[in-house]
Amino acid sequence: MNLMVCMRGEPDELSFLTEVAELEAGIELQSYGMIGVQSARDWETRFAQHKAICNQFQGPIAVHGPFIGMEYVHIDHLIRDVVLCRLDMTFDVAVKLKAGRVVLHSGYEAEIDLFKLQDEWLKRSVEFWQREIRRWADAGIEIVLENDIHTSPDVLIQLVNQVDCPSLGLCMDIGHQHLFSKLDAPEWVRRMDHRLLHVHLHDNDGASDSHWSIGRGTIDFEPFYAAIKQHVPGVTIALETEDKMEVKIGDLRRLATHFASTRHRAAGHTNTKVTNSSLLE
Image (tube, rainbow, N blue to C red; front, side, top):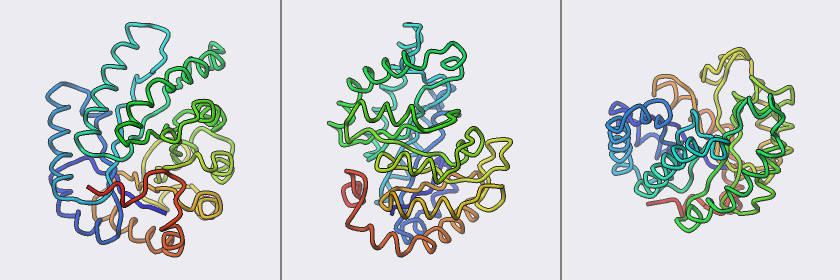
């Protein structure tokens, strides 16, 4: 069991790096998707802030890539060209930050269901990732594909199974699952099984993607935690709450306590090919 805390790279986060390290947690660097993509200057500023964190932190690093409009197999070739350009930029950032993992959304949008393009989307996505994953694997970087509007994990499972590369896995966002799926969170974990490498943990009320602190919303975490311990004890849980860093660190400490025995048992047994030690700079 590995823990991470999500950070945007703001200067006031730097003072908490020691506490993150003391908890033997890593950092998932975010905000390219909502801030970095708005201009070339915003992208470079975000990268510089993330580089400042990496210069002071020796633990595991993950990066969350852009997600709005990132449809890798979009039917329009001009849109695909732009998306691939942004993906190239994300690859460059991940390599420079020495990230061991990059979180990306799958590019599955509502139109896929509306126009009954599920089979075509899966076919084209498999072909895309069979080509694309090679450079990430060669760079020692895992890609984990995150659910967003998915009502079940099945299409993502099929995608990962058919690509059949250990450098491509899944990220389960429990907040998104709570919003869009009638299947409960433990069932998602059971179905994803060993393909589940990364979890985004936050809370909401089932009505909006609020990214609240744990316990503030209506998500039932205990059965979810039990499923994690049973099926994927080596998974990485990234705390993705939108709150002050003091609150985030408090949540992180409680997670470290809750999963203490699992983290110790899983220290030499992880369901990923990239271990904590290999992610160290």
